[in-house]
Amino acid sequence: MAMEAADKLITGQELTREEFIELLQAASSSTELCTRLAEEARRLRKQYYGDKVYLRGLIEFTNYCKNNCYYCGIRCENRKIRRYRLTKEEILDCCKTGRALGFQTFVLQGGEDPFFTDERLAELIYSIKERHPECAVTLSLGERSYESYRRLREAGADRYLLRHETADPAHYRKLHPDNMSLQNRKQCLLDLKALGYQVGAGFMVGSPGQTEEELAEDLLFLKDLQPQMVGIGPFIPQKDTPFAKERAGSVEKTLLLLSVVRILLPKALIPATTALGTMDADGREKGMRAGANVVMPNLSPQKNREQYALYDHKISTGEEAAECTDLLMRRMEAAGFHLSWERGDAR
Ligand code: SAH
Image (tube, rainbow, N blue to C red; front, side, top):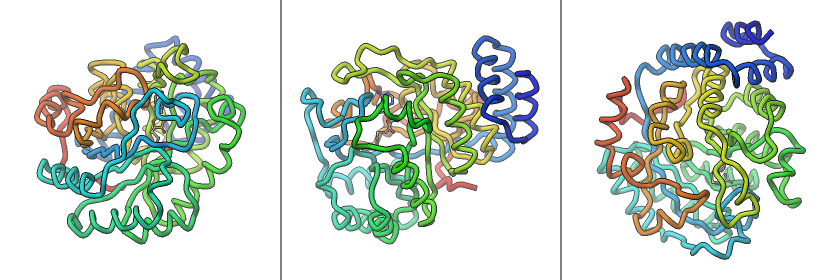
């Protein structure tokens, strides 16, 4: 049964929810099946993107957040972290530094911080594009209105990352307080697509309460949405959240899902995430071998990196740091990949 599902996936046929569940269950106890899926994922990655690894400079520009997601270390109820917000000049400095290092994509990520009104953000995006017209600006600022997304797009934003987190409504409820809804999050993704953004969805692997059933929903949702980018990383507990005592997601399962998503959406831009690198010192390389083709080194000011504490022990030095891309390059070369300084838009 599971082998049939794997064959269907590999030959590009649509899988039912039950078939996805079968496949994920079988793969969690069969290294043979995982290897087969990883090989196919690598083949597709190579077919569409060769050995290139695209780079994105990640600027974590605010850790203020009005939301209270149970898994996230920057949730508003966490009084233990020191909050910060970069000034416009600091953000422009990050871009300048990043551009000098060779980056052609800047990802502005932050909590949902009401200080950053449409006007402030539009002004900021406009200034970045004015200084670096050849660069792509990616936003990752959570849920906003259609009108807001429209203004930011008009100001020059090219891409938007908004992980759906889980496509199962009941599971969504276990991860978020009542004032948030999966329906709204999905609507945001549709709005972003309609506005012409290159859109990234995605989810955590091993978040509390997640089973193969929920993951199957995630895969069906991705197939349906057809996002240009997909972010997948293991859940990692953060000590000052309600999920402090929960278990982290596994590296192997994350790699499996990277492979399945590569096969499902062969042309997608898929990062080997910081969370994967945090769980495993070779996480980046393993992610690439499982089908990923993007890395997002940290370009935030050094003084603030520790404060963007989404989860415990989050790495931001060494190959994770934008100023150490030579180290990252050596490691990627050793694994059979090479860093690309192109903008790396979706194909
Ligand atoms: N406010 C933005 C950015 C959120 S942080 C937004 O809503 O999209 C970026 C991603 O980090 C989240 O989408 C989530 O999937 C991930 N994340 C948050 N807490 C995490 C944790 N404890 N472990 C692993 N990943 C986490």
